Amino acid sequence: MPRLLHLRPRLCRCLRLGLCLLGACALLVACSAPRSQRRPVTGSTQPTVARPAADRVTAVRPLVQRAARRHGVAEDLVLAVIAVESSFRPDARSHVGARGLMQLMPRTAASIARHLQREDYDITDPEFNIEAGTYYLGYLIRRFGREDLALAAYNAGPSRIGRLARRGDALPSYSQRYITAVATSRRRFTASDLHDDVPVAEARAIDHDRAGLRALLREEFGERPDEALPAPVADPSAGDSGG
Image (cartoon, rainbow, N blue to C red; front, side):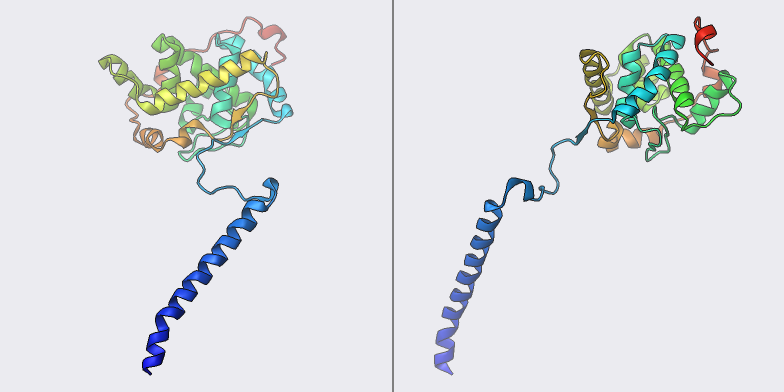
């Protein structure tokens, strides 16, 4: 029995040495594997970037051009908002219920539909979603008089951004990140002359920032959108727009 107790520390050391050797062998095998077979590291902070399919961009471009011209909003700005909001996916839906290419909330969409005299509409229909989203973006630009504030309001709600603007407070960090994302996407569209291979972030910018999501959930309905929104602007090219 004393002899066995004397051998026990040696057995433990041998086991630890064996485990170390096995770990070293596994590491060597992993490092020697071809790069294409290596598994990605979980939790990487590298942002996921996707290129929207050419047909998705091509399909919405005429709708964007018509809506941008009708409501006095720059075409590349509308495209940039669509890129950040939905990555050109008509079926996109956020955690708070915003839907479609320009991620409209159902209540906002219903209000705009009344002003556009669209009794029968589908919020996910690209034509209606772009028309309503561009109309709303144009309204916010005219209301705030600054494009950055309009984008912040589009993202986090006009009531909250209006209160900050009246107090002269700085925009929240999530609003600043959203504005930067849209500006970056807009430069890419402009630089590529609106080509179809523009890189677009796959996820909505708001999904990268839980603070922004909470701000949307806390947004107060202090003003009725259907009362605040102005009447639609007549389209000077309505005669050749094809409806």
